[in-house]
Length: 411
Image (cartoon, rainbow, N blue to C red; front, side, top):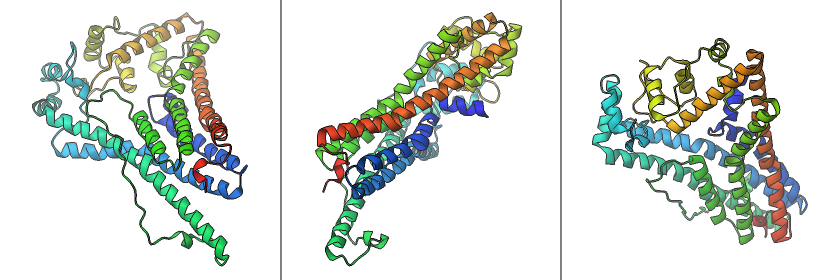
């Protein structure tokens, strides 16, 4: 259970590290720092800034983390309604020597008939399927981006504006006390639509990073004044770097350091290190791997030996997809470079373990160190996001405005 959790938060290609850093650490810290910095100016501005930050961070997190999966789920149902399998990888449309839609149809026509029929239907309606897939991608980017970058900020700003107007009225008349009822308005709030466009030709992309880019543009565009736009740009660009780039390099640095200091190979996922069959195989020296990392050797191995330990571990890591009958799913693209890298890492781990005096102790130690590295990565990147970046943001704010309070709250 603990290994599963550590493995999940250690995978910088997944959403789990983002959930942990964003919801559990970064947002509460940002809210606290926002209040603390704005209190340097006044309690009223601190209250306004805290409320805005709370609404902004938690509603944005909800859309950011859940928006893309929800839109894609709805889009997939529409694609299914049109008679296509939405999980077919569009990378197969580009034929190469060992995989592609034409290649896979010929190779698997007798072993995966149902899946091949789905591929043939897509092949015969390629333009329609490409349009549907592109529409799904664009919707998954535009809808969350529009909500986070344009609609939610305007709603948040409109609420602050209304509260400030009510505050002035109360100050003038001194006959009313603040209440939730005073926030009601008979007027409709109008919004100007701004959209970040995308094209269907975009292929290998990180959708979360793209959405975050759109969010950055939206936040700058909807800023209430020039100073707020500068501060938002500083904050959002820093957040993008610390969310999507820094953790990868921190992980590499920590793993290389562990390799040098302790003579351990900790490049593998802790779930792989915990595999009992792998440990027994290392002890008994009977683990079979593909001869080389060449596409030919890798494809021959995973297709002819689906029950081999290497194939099973690669499948568990999401690098290969097998059908229930043990045949590789012809609708799925295999990232052969990633698979070759995995083969090399596994081979190096096996060789390093076999050189140790006690293989079982070596594996336990490697797994422990890897867990420490993952937790350290989360703590370091979270500290940078939750403490360092907000502090730098308010320092930048003070530098360009001469004040600690959020520039958007100026009267």
